[in-house]
Length: 279
Image (cartoon, rainbow, N blue to C red; front, side, top):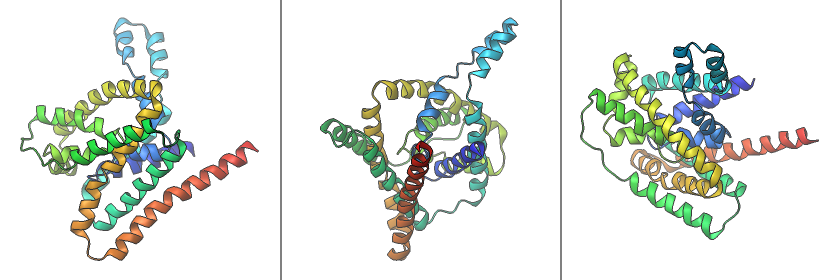
């Protein structure tokens, strides 16, 4: 059951990551696996490769056993499946963006409630995160090609955004002029381009996760406040897409309220289960 739940979380992360303006890191934060994910990624060092080459199979096995496969296998399977499915059927509407708008807004509210309160320091870092994300999502796309080095760098940069709540990896790809091209690559299973992009993403996430894991350990409250600001500032993009694609305001409001309510319902169920377990 735990494996299935992690798989479903990966599925939702994959769906979010492929939608411009929505971050898979936000979904990880909402579903409670964010810190475990960042820490687990940061612990991967590939020393087992060196041990294998030296013929020290016991140390190699020990090093491999430290990798959190119980998290990575179902999570990556869910993300990968979502990418393959969504690349073929993706059709973004005002209702889609409104649902995620409500989802993210409710998540930011709950994260603030779980934090250390509305201190000047927390609000300041949230404000910095808000301004950064708000201004960033207003940038226009770069006009660059689709060569393999460009795809490698795009994967490196996009994965860092995907793991940050509030910064959309799909938006980074839009900004780098690679979003539609990568959808084309996924639809047509162009393995060379897929491998290049994924290799760049692997390098990016292994490096960036170490920095993020250290920051969360040393300055958790400040980092979470900054991430909440990123989430709120990045709402500019789904809002713009809602306004540009909206035919009627009522369905949009209902969709946003549905997304908003789901978070609080999940929180309520989670708290009840926790209280029962404590008893």
